[in-house]
Image 1 (cartoon, rainbow, N blue to C red):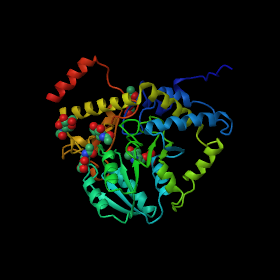
Image 2 (spheres, helix red, strand yellow):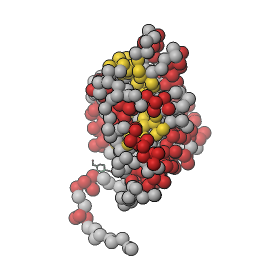
Image 3 (tube, rainbow, N blue to C red):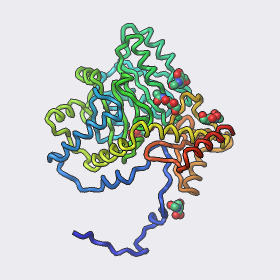
Image 4 (tube, rainbow, N blue to C red):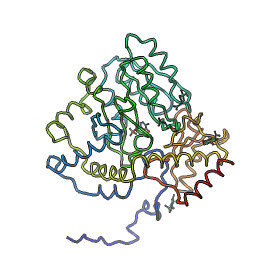
Length: 389
Ligand SMILES: *Cc1c(COP(=O)(O)O)cnc(C)c1O
Ligand SMILES: *[C@@H]1O[C@H](CO)[C@@H](O)[C@H](O)[C@H]1NC(C)=O
Ligand SMILES: *[C@@H]1O[C@H](CO)[C@@H](O)[C@H](O)[C@H]1NC(C)=O
Ligand SMILES: *[C@@H]1O[C@H](CO)[C@@H](O)[C@H](O)[C@H]1NC(C)=O
Ligand SMILES: CC(=O)N[C@H]1CO[C@H](CO)[C@@H](O)[C@@H]1O
């Protein structure tokens, strides 16, 4: 069947169309990020019967392959039609009971929002504060673990890469502390802006629940919350008393056993998109994807230094390779820079959030992005001379 060609005339173009001239808007916010064309094409399709044999066959490959982005062989993944916020809720309610004590690190807007959710869900949250721009205070965690011989702490909640300040936390160090004190607390990790861009090793670092959202480093449209549970987390789910319905792992596990996979309607288009997105990641190689992010992160920080501006992230060891938060001089409102970039250059940058509103703007460098291609040697020289400056 030939596609029906619609008559086109300039008069049909809406005002909105004129706003989008040729080429792309330049999207450099730390999520949502650019979607690869292959993913967009894979998603452009009709709805399908999700109980037909085709969708469970597709789902099976997705559940197997999604484990690779978490670097786990023992974890069990769940694909929820939700965002990162729903994935947080799924991690908490499936493993904990109301009133349970959680140690949670506050270091930027996203950790703050997660803490707010933890409090509203009725957990007893022991908040460890860091100044914005600094990493999680592991010294404070150590003293809490040392004095908790009764094991009242049921979980440690930590954001791997704080998208608001451009700080990456050392998860391996958290695991080593838990092990050093033989503490059984679950380790729950928000990897929304790190998984698929930064080095992340669920099994090796003993992460009990790891989660991410589709619109960040995975470079898909918004709408999939991916949660991965360790065997210990699945065991905890058997006794956790928090009320949960939509996000209940039990319902998913039941359908996994039947080989039909879905307790309710999945977004077929997003599943095909995820398939295409994972294929692209594996084709490039996860390690190369991570290296690409290291390169882009380093280059962005060097550019910021060359502009004479400050990184919001206070210490080099805490720098994030997926987002750079730039501090502007006190006489400038950073929101004006973001507005100007959008109006003048069709360039989307991230605003400063909450405590750092007006003080910083953010450059996202995660997902389906590249640099201007130069000969490798020229690129090295370029980076070298920039760092001398
Ligand atoms: C974006 C983000 C979230 C929130 O995810 P939503 O998809 O907007 O619900 C959570 N954590 C981090 C680290 C994020 O970057
Ligand atoms: C950029 O946006 C302006 C409107 O804000 C529009 O006039 C212009 O055509 C756009 N250019 C591109 C390349 O999208
Ligand atoms: C990051 O910063 C915190 C303190 O701000 C520190 O405890 C931690 O060890 C730092 N390093 C890494 C690699 O996370
Ligand atoms: C920002 O980061 C770059 C890269 O590590 C560093 O060279 C530079 O000194 C930093 N700038 C400031 C002002 O801290
Ligand atoms: C655990 C982890 O991913 N650490 C990374 C934090 O970010 C710095 C700089 O971006 C990397 O060098 C670390 O490997």
